[in-house]
Length: 188
Image 1 (cartoon, rainbow, N blue to C red):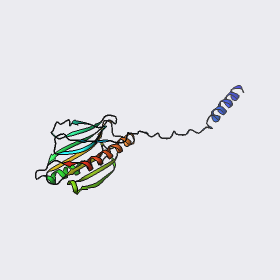
Image 2: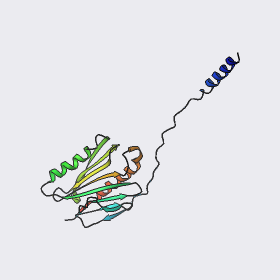
Image 3: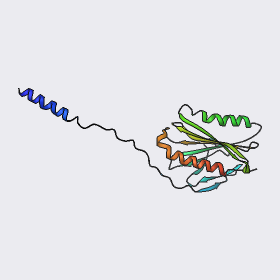
Image 4: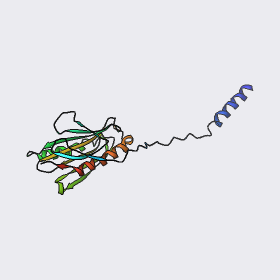
């Protein structure tokens, strides 16, 4: 009888402990904020000049090819890689290569949107690609004057691609790329 009473008490404790439903914790989102961008002009003796965010440091590219640079954003652990090539009867192949680059991210990307860029006043034409999802690069662009100059750029972060965690930094760098594109001038 004693065992029966203890079993009854044990079972009643078991059922009374299940009254509170377990609820999942809400997802947390990063609340990263970056300072308002201030720009200064970059002139490194190449056939182009542009404005860059003062937070970014200009460094030569890892390939050490003349006029290939990277803009390093140390506080975001991200970079904008910029390459330059002269146009020498090869505009079609340069355009094809620049347009293929965003497509390499389609496996991991949720969406890739391209916006045409035209600035007739400064003879600057190109595309800006926004990449959403866990792709390696969140934004890419190319600019050309169609006769002499061809410039490409890509954003990369020093971390595994996890779109949710880099959204604030990626959006900040996308604005900087748009400003770079708008301020670009060719040196003839």
